[in-house]
Amino acid sequence: LYELIHEKGVMVMVSAAPVYDRLKNVDERAEAYRKILKDGADIIETDRPEEVAAAIQTFYPRESRKYD
Image (cartoon, rainbow, N blue to C red; front, side):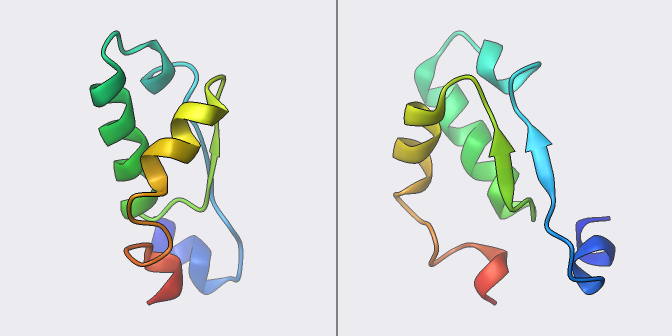
């Protein structure tokens, strides 16, 4: 679905707050945030922006599909 949306030139946002932000373990949350972007999302809506930034800086933008 992400690829079909990207073909139209539209960016995709995923809301992390309802599910991923509620994970108890910080490492699990970090992996979840990285997976969101690896799966093709462009923007993450979150209540934990500092954690998201720390989690994705380990690979972004090098592994981001947005730059393929």
